[in-house]
Length: 326
Image (cartoon, rainbow, N blue to C red; front, side, top):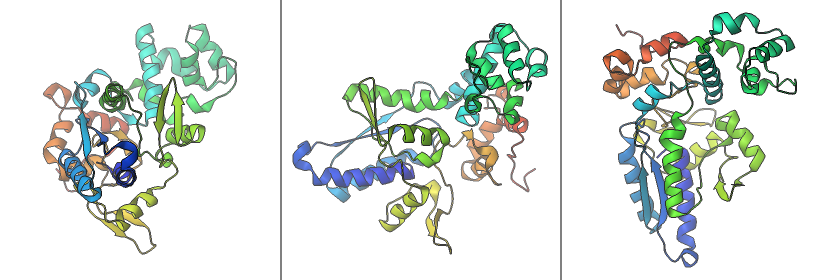
């Protein structure tokens, strides 16, 4: 339903229609993962878009709608909030879990000994921290090599003491795992519309494997990995591809670039990854206008049955009220 996936499906459907002899006029298998964290209009748009593609290329689409047995609300409650970035959230989760398991306090047992080079690493080892935790907190590997890639940046260390859990697991539980179950059922390898420029982790993975990756007998293809966001927008604009309502429309700016008039992404609407980098109104502030009831629910405290975003965003210093709100 998103922009990248729409471009991929349009291109692949054209290919599918031109090679009927090879696949015997089989339907094209399409998977939509409803994460329970989608904009309300997305499920309806996905069905509409698949019908549009069927009519455009005179093919059949076998649409599989997959959904986890648990919701985003459950994942946040049991696993933690998606904040900062996937990479940072994973590292914070590692440290918080370790400290909880060992009964250690960050401000007493860890924080005073940080930023002292190899002495920090040796101290952490002396209190039986595993190599992963030593790396997260000091930047030193088990061989005493410096690796800043998988150590927690200083600006995010305060999250270790956050009064709420933090995790990157939501995407795995709500999207990746359900899709893998379908892959296993239909015995097919996936083709994704992800772009390398979307994150450092995706860029690193793409540079390592290229468009097609094979591991443990399983394949995965990301043929659009080298595309840019402008490539996506230009394709949608030039070929007049229908886009989901949250995007608004596509307009061309004076500098020649394209952009959406509303949301730039229609992924998980309540995800806080990267929200701290957004100018106001950020995605949560915009949600107050797009889906006011959802906004009220997520801002309500956990004790009151909500998602407790007010506490989380206050702790992170991210604004959540629109100017003029009371």
